[in-house]
Amino acid sequence: MTTSRRLADRKSAKFQKNITKRGSVPETTVKKSNDYPVGPIVLGFFIFVVIGSSLFQIIRTATSGGLA
Image (cartoon, rainbow, N blue to C red; front, side, top):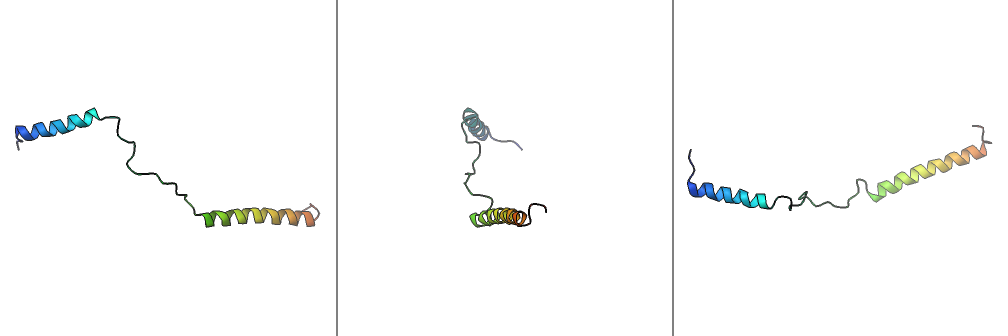
């Protein structure tokens, strides 16, 4: 299948225009958002559990005399 000379020239001009713009396009077209992978409630609960369990362990060790 043959293409007309006019169509071929139009395609060629389009690609030549893109070559001159090389390097000036953004790295990604998707905007990065500042969303966290976990929500603030889940993060707060996790911190509560970690700090609470460590405090519980300290209190339990202190009341048992530090042996167990």
